[in-house]
Every structure is written in structure tokens, then in C-alpha cells.
Image 1: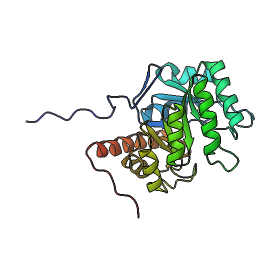
Image 2: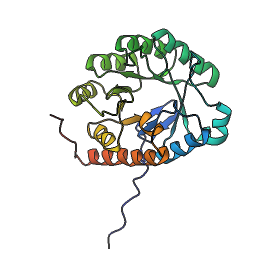
Image 3: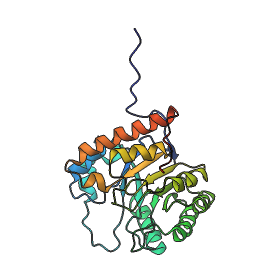
Image 4: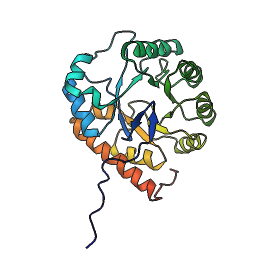
Length: 255
């Protein structure tokens, strides 16, 4: 009788290592939309996440959770802390947010977003901000619209990974331009994260099939009737897509 297959629910090898910290889970969750620390804990654990993301709202117009409540409920020592500039509308705001996060929490891994009022990444400002943060000692994970030249410039600037917009944030449209995504991935050798508009497990599987090293999901889970249940579903979707890629079952480009 053959032995049972190995447990593949948790990847054994990290897909990214930074400053002695390892990223094993290929599902990253944004938590900016939550106001309940207990729910944040449930969602992170259901997702199998190993990253905790925090930020500053420079405008101070959005609800936020107290870090003390999160530390008590979530158990922040169990996670790799990274910062995000997701509320930054300009290069200047992004730099200010990143520096405050490092001063306040000692965070040096930065999820860099520069999104003006249209909420789309501003590629040119992102390249400039990324170069400045790398020069200041940050490990930078910039968010851009798919574009091979921009991605290559960010890798050359020293960014640790590249984050590509799959579709407009919160749109639930999935990956809208698969060819552009694949061409951008092919232009770099650093890990690539797909995010934005990933609204269903099927869309997450597809993102992984296209070759993403990881995905980031926020709105779909935060707004689900049972966020922890959808987080668990997304966790299995990531695993299914990754295992398919490992077996050479990469899906064709959409027509």
C-alpha cells in the first residue's frame, strides 16, 4: 500500500527572504478595512498568513485599530511586520509614511504604493520613491501597472519584489490583461506579487497559473459575509494554483 501524500497545506520553502525574515505563505492580506481586532486575527489565521501589514493615515480620516488591541488579540510576534503606504497620493506622502513607520515600529520592509486620486499606481513616481527608499535602507515592494520597462527599472533600483495591478482595486475583475502581466513578469528575476481586483478564488488560481509568486487580497475578504471562510478559500486557491504550476499545468492566455 502506498503511503499517504505529504501535507502540502503549508509551503516548506520561502518564496521571499528579507533581512533574515522569511515569507512562506503566498497569500498576503491587507487589513486596512477592518475595525475589529478579533476579526483580523481570525482572518489572518484562516488565510495561513505570515505577514502583518500596518500603515499611517496621514489625513487621519479613516477608522483604524489600536496597535495595542491588535498586539493583544492577533499575536503580532507571530508575523513578519511590513509597512504600507497604501493611502499615499504622492511620492512625498509615500516617503513620509515609510519614514514614520520605521521611526515608530522599526519597520524596514515597505509595501510601496503611490496612488493619486484615480487610485491607480503612478509608475514614474513609484520608481523615484522606490530608489530613495532603497537608498535609505528599506526593502521595497513597489506597486505598479504592468509594464516591463518600469518593472526592470525597479529591479535595477534594488527592489526586493514587484507588485503588479491585476485590475482596479476592489473591482473584482481578476487579471484583465494577462499578456501584459506575463510580459512584465518575464522582464524581472525578482518575485512578482499580483493584486488588485482579485475577488474570487477562481481569479486567485488564475493569477497563480500566470506565474505569480504570491497574491495580495484585501477587499474581497474584508467585505465577505464571512471573511474568515473566504480567507480559507483563498488560501486553498493559492495552493491549488501553485501546485498546478509546479506540475507544468500553466493555463493559456485568455483570448
